[in-house]
Amino acid sequence: MARLLVLACSATKRPDPGRLPALARYDGPLWRTLRAADPEGRAAKVAFLSAHYGFRDAATPIAEYDARLTQDLAERMIAGGVTTRWPRPPSPRRPDTCGIHPAAEIVSLTRHGTEPVEEIALVGGRLYVEVMHALVRGFVEMGCVRRDARVSVINGPIGRMRQDLRAWLAADRSRGGRP
Picture 1: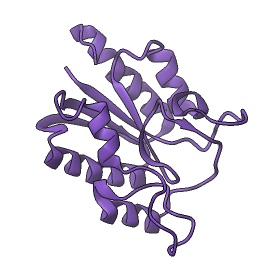
Picture 2: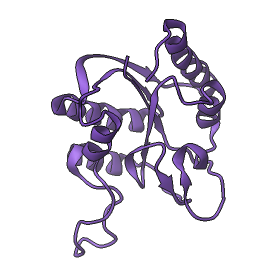
Picture 3: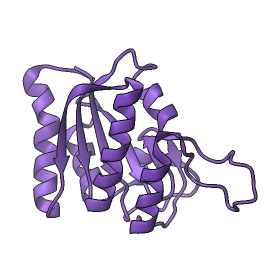
């Protein structure tokens, strides 16, 4: 079964210089839980949603940054849908050649839609989950997420989110599945 975990970025990041895969760069509680619960990365494909980088595969090398998802930015991400590149150009007068759009990332994660996502977990705060839901709707229209995909939302107090994330990851092992 094709599973996808979409995690919100983390304010806590490893300060290592240069670029690190997002899975290693982010060091908040949910990311530590992911690494501990699924150290070999077999339970699901993992992507992240960042106020700076947008929607990306967690294997993407990223630099340290400091950006928060605001209501305005969340609304712009939702309005931009799956075809708006993140990060945005540094100036509106510059060409839109920065970043990558969510559609390109999901196509890569699903092998050009030949392995559509059947189960997805959206993990993060309210604004992040709102943007994630909007992106999932676009991914369904692209054929990269099945219309009947099971969608789990993991949101709430951090302790509960960590428990729910661990349980979601373990559910794949109990069924014997692989991403």
